[in-house]
Length: 478
Ligand SMILES: Cc1cc2nc3c(=O)[nH]c(=O)nc-3n(C[C@H](O)[C@H](O)[C@H](O)COP(=O)(O)OP(=O)(O)OC[C@H]3O[C@@H](n4cnc5c(N)ncnc54)[C@H](O)[C@@H]3O)c2cc1C
Image 1 (cartoon, rainbow, N blue to C red):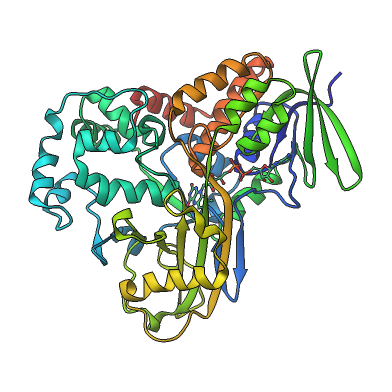
Image 2: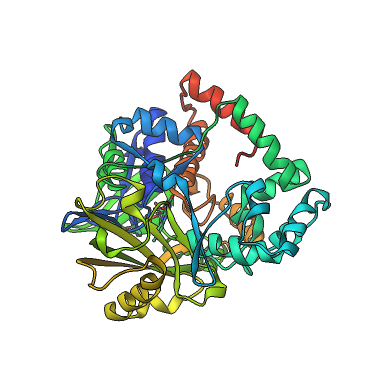
């Protein structure tokens, strides 16, 4: 006898979205979360009229599963789109100055960012034969296809800024799956981009960048209230034990120990925590999970009067290449991106420090962190005089898992060991991508597999299933 079909351990976006999909398949689902409230890393906070994000600030979506979840969970009306002004530019710091990043291949060639040598190198890309190994790093892949200057000026800051990773160590196929797939499928990135653009136009596939009026917490709060999903907070799971055809899970709660029997388990907790839970069952699986490293990140939110900022803030923000020797990896102009992030006449700038590039920053005291952020922003954004009127700092010691080293081999080893623990599933940001989009999509894939194992199915509405069919057939989009 079982208490539930599926018990999900961890109530971040991975756990909550997996629960949402499983519920749609008609299965009984429990989510046990150790924190006082659900959402994991995602948390929006209001402070002095500003709306800040502790982790994910936005969803950049091109996946039909995400569109379906947002629409069918009733979140469509709560969405807020990226402003037209933010769409105008994405900047890169280049020799201490902000330079607009060319977003199209044609503009890349005319951009002042690149030397003539780099531009000529770019033009040779379609003629370079496909190559590379399973363990090729991002740096090797980009140098091989686009040249070192593109790596140093564009790809390194992208990988450091959005994934907290080091391109010299990051696995290319895992870190840039769509880009590497273009090479595999079309032989060159240029050809792949052109074909994808035509396909995308034909199939009306668009990228939707959005958040919610109340911030990203709206997403996790809504999912946590899904009727039929039984969420328990302040439940720290400390033991999972096999039973005939299922699992017995024990957690520490405010009222002491609590146990529950489930037919299937989904572990959405960080790798180290998953390792501790599976260690008594399979030490080798635990060892593989233990080997997954995380990068720390520090987020600094600065609220200030619009008049203090000399720059027009006409874009999403900027990324900072390693060659600029700064602990900051990027800066999002949140009040340009979305309405309602700052009081009238004020702006909200969110700076990201650390990652694999400068992990020690997470241990800096508040004063040092603020000084470092302002020292970088003052000349670049032409800040005048006074100090920010609102400051908030969010530290993440395990911000993002690093897809470094022999990542594919590690994932294969994990899958092989998991096969010995039937009914245990790992749905977490160390596999399948760290973004909210990837987390929701991974939740869908896992729910589909679990539903099939339990003789159920995940119903899709016609419009979404045809959309997904196209995407799978198409394989890559950019
Ligand atoms: C600074 C920063 C900025 C980011 N920006 C973006 C962005 O703009 N866009 C984007 O798409 N993504 C962004 N991300 C990535 C994204 O926010 C995360 O990858 C995602 O939220 C991770 O969700 P998760 O559910 O996998 O993990 P978590 O959110 O870590 O959830 C895991 C949950 O498990 C719980 N748990 C742990 N141990 C136990 C236990 N023993 N028992 C029960 N529960 C347990 C934890 O309390 C936690 O709630 C950002 C991340 C960071 C850190």
